[in-house]
Image (cartoon, rainbow, N blue to C red; front, side, top):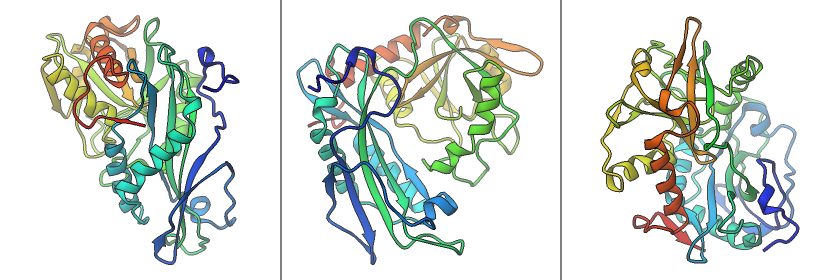
Length: 339
């Protein structure tokens, strides 16, 4: 284990680790790929990633477990989503088996940076692809780089002592038939301005509605939104423009199969959220971050069971999810890959 890293005080800042994986697409094919110590990228000033934001990415985690293993969590789903994103941005598909192998190689090469089992943190793994070939006309690049790096990260949000405040955004996150369902860098950049305004007004994040009717709950700038109803049902908003979160899909399975909770997956009207007792943002970085209120121009909507940290139901989901990742309880088949 890397003794230069203070694992008890990890932040959300990038830390350079020893190795990263690189593969280049040129002349219609991917090269064999390699690990390298160089964490810099040298490409043309006219690269498609700079000119037209042709870039996609993923995020997943590696952990030390109660059994002494280092594991990665559901990398197969990240690979599937990466393929969907590449196809949507007219980028060459990086094969699923090679994606998973690249993640394994990167984690294995940086195993000294995986935090101890008893520390609140993980080795965050970031696969991404950029259009590295030069373009002037508005066309996809002819050359690409697929890269994977890893960095140790701490907890995204303290879910035990405080809750987030969301602002109901007047801006749109994704258009119908747009790119909201893929993990493209441009989606996140387009949320920066609205997110900056929300933070200046004292809120942690935005809640976005569907851009067509401004009637249904979509998600926040960087995470899916979930609710708990009065009767304990997990309510999961559905929309073709919501990113299919791997964390969200895992939580749905855990709710049904581990906790015997009722799950309601459907379009959720904003007008009904005041009837819910818990709200949370879910994603790779945070697992679940509790939401205490949503601010609108006319009123604040409070979620009484999650105003001061995770409520009872989301705490159960949160704890079960983390115990599965740490091999404290048995994981569903295929969820964990031991390095």
